[in-house]
Image (cartoon, rainbow, N blue to C red; front, side):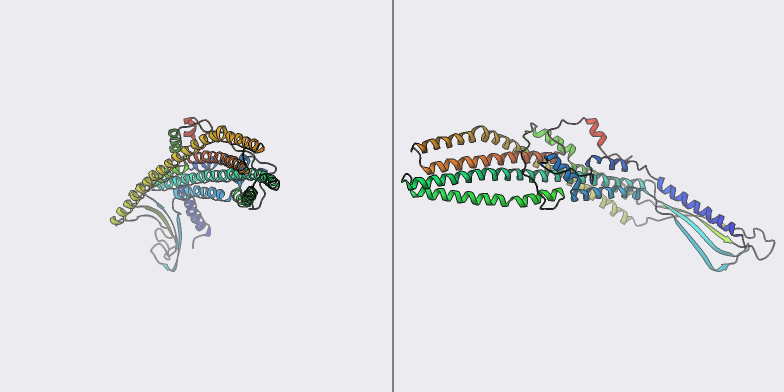
Length: 469
């Protein structure tokens, strides 16, 4: 029987070969330096970073920063992207080597001695280019996941701005309606006093009471709307629904002076949904190439060591010599119909990705056109209400009040003038909110702030993650 040290030496040799095979598995395909770079590319998102304080009267930017760091849906999209990145090294790695040990229940007698056991090591190598294509598919999917995260972030910012602007409008509507209710109450007292003095008919008192009741009902409705709007905002912030939020003080007053053609150019270049579909198309392109390579066999290389004791007959040549066997095997891709079907499937998926991208681009372009029209329509109406209608209604109310004092206008004319001014003031606040919402929607669609200067082309190229090699 051979010394134990000899056996341990052979086992160590095979285990060393196993380690080399594992090393080959990690270096068989292109480098993976892109994955950590991609993760660092969104360090400015600060997902899960320290949250800003929302004490006092936070600004809109502070709210948006808080939502970007604390919203659970956005964290979920970020984690899906990280998970997709971790699939890349898995797809680019060789299959695990196989180490097998066989113990002979009954020793196999040979001329040079009885064989007791053997140990084998085998490694499968996919056909040239398969691992690279699998890695490319996983990397393109990871890039698409990043763009899905970016789309979720832009959607979150838009949804928060939409609710925030609606919350601002509610606050202004409550304030204006409270002032109107107070005025209607005063007018009702005046109408009652004049009725008792015989200066106005009883119908004026009834009209004043009706308008006051309508105003109080409107005010109650507006006040009750605050709770669900606060809950909507807190949901985007990742906070409890009853967490207090102060009334917003003001809206952004900027008007975007940009053409629809420029917006469509930005849409094509920056929209994360379209970028995600571009990466999905690149993935399907790699899948078509991989389907073609599946027609070629994979190769398995192996080595087997057989432990052999000393021969029974002394003086036998090569007594106790341990044989080492080399092994080569390939799989046989004989079923051509299966591989043709796989190629057709891959090409159909590629065509579907291209069509989906075109369809989504057309829909987003239509959304941009509509939002751009609504933005300019709101800007026009803001000028109309601010410079024409509200000043005229205010002047009309003052004229009616003077005429009422001199007996040239009745009480109902005074109430109508007051209600006209109220409606115009609320419509003015509504179109201001509409303008801000449309601007936020356009920024979500084109994937960038509209009011900031356009970045240089070389900077955009540096941020483009679509390179594989």
